[in-house]
Image (cartoon, rainbow, N blue to C red):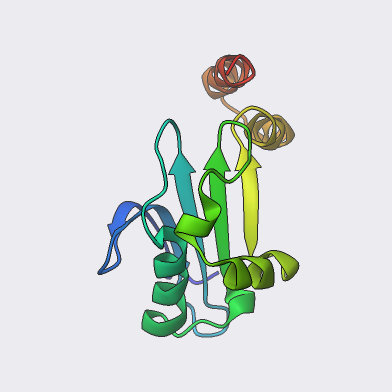
Length: 138
């Protein structure tokens, strides 16, 4: 990874909405975008996921295999998915594993637990334990 190519943004304005978490690798050899829509006690906006997908395709010139849309909710389920992305595009992206559903209750604690062995700072480990405990109570 070349330094300076990988960027992570919070509330990134993409021209027609704000992406909650946007990770973009601008390296010409391996460009990609990870778009995370964080849905905690909030409904979908009209064509929200579709707009973010279109942004990655047209503005960033990325092919489907270089885009990952992650829909993060408490239970890992879409709320108003047809309002957010049309059924045909949704199916296409899900079949290619380019649109995934993640859960704060199950997936995030598992991801954090699997990362724990690499964490050196005891205070950081303690924060991860506490956060995981809170998430499992959602």
